[in-house]
Amino acid sequence: MEKNVSVATLQILGGHPSLDFANTVSARRDRWGPDLLVDYGDLLDWAERADLLDAPVIGRLRALAAASPSSSAAALDRAKRLREALYAVFSALAAATDAPADALELVRSAYLEARAQQSLSLGRAGAGWHWRGAPCLDAVTHAIAIQAVELLTGPEASRVKECLGHRCGWLFLDTTRNRSRRWCSDADCGTRDRVARHRARAKSAVQRQP
Image (cartoon, rainbow, N blue to C red):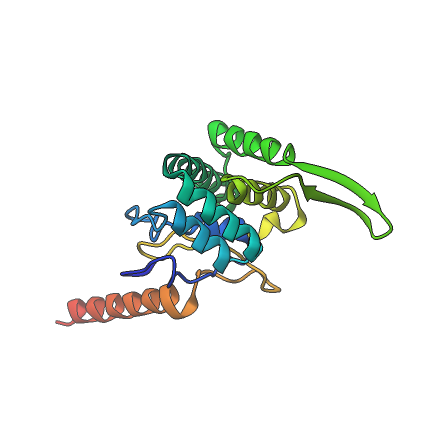
């Protein structure tokens, strides 16, 4: 969607963490890339910007990554594989088509693995899930997997859309009352579309002149 963008300048437009995670590839329509998650630090920077994890947890993960670069690289690879599976599933959902079976299976497996890292407790405030033990390098992936499945199986799933802007394809949650949102950003992709259509009409008018 944007030129010369990085995790630090990336617009958070999806309306849901799992959709914003899928949008960490700058463009998916008409071209793919660039990928904004170059290293594990980028993954943590994104998680911090998206308010996905608490600051102390992110600090712990930075220390773990510094202590084991090879392990953090492997964790980043797992996060990216989940990201691509989520994009395939949510894109299919937006288009009202069947999602690829392998993508669905990857999301399912990631969700079950994430839930296995949690405990269910019941107290005076009610029931809730809680992470067990210290955070691991897959903490971002686990949190995203859970939120993604909750969106997929929840009432807002029908509001997932894909931006049709040139060199975009970002996902977003359409929260408008009449579900009329078309672009990830009206000021960006929407404006480019209007400019392109205006130029096309002007060119067509010139060509029709005798």
